[in-house]
Length: 55
Image 1: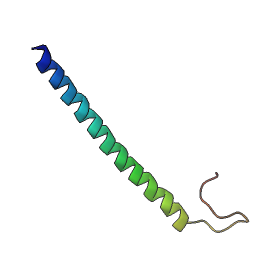
Image 2: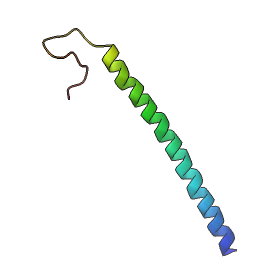
Image 3: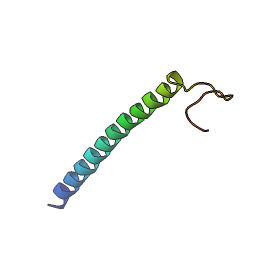
């Protein structure tokens, strides 16, 4: 009974980690797209380099 519970717990942990990693990949892709759009959609240059972020 204990080995079965350990296997089920391991499967649950690996499934959760896999789902979390997949979700993090999607978030990273969305952030990358927004960051790249920031270079394309620049406001009018007002004496600065024209970046949409402050740093």
